[in-house]
Image 1 (cartoon, rainbow, N blue to C red):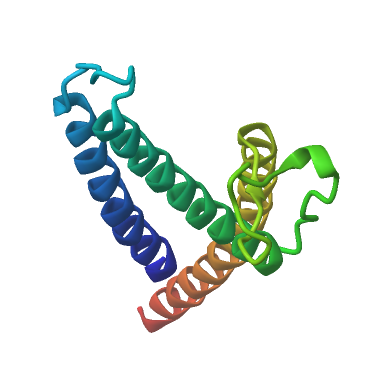
Image 2 (spheres, one colour):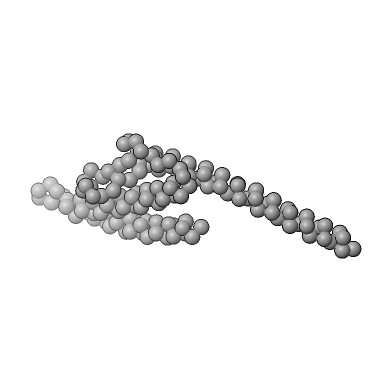
Length: 141
């Protein structure tokens, strides 16, 4: 539970930086200089792309951590992973949108099965405790 909250707070930080980069990109005028280039717009676009990549890598790391925790197989096909075209060799690959969606669905199915397992055990334990108190109350009369 606390891991999910920590993830949501960290993701919120990434989204805040992404929003500020996107707003900056929208504010840069589309004016082209004498050489036919618009370097401020290009730089702002690179910042937006960088923030998007960072956010995707963070989400992929979290999904992989969850998959390991619930023993869900991590996609290993080459088409399930994406490496940014301008990335250096030491930068990590991250999951494509389709692979992340499938992995998230598999993790949720495993979480649901885990929850159902424990919910059945807790219900049984509460029923037993209730039965014991009922029997004690009957014989106390």
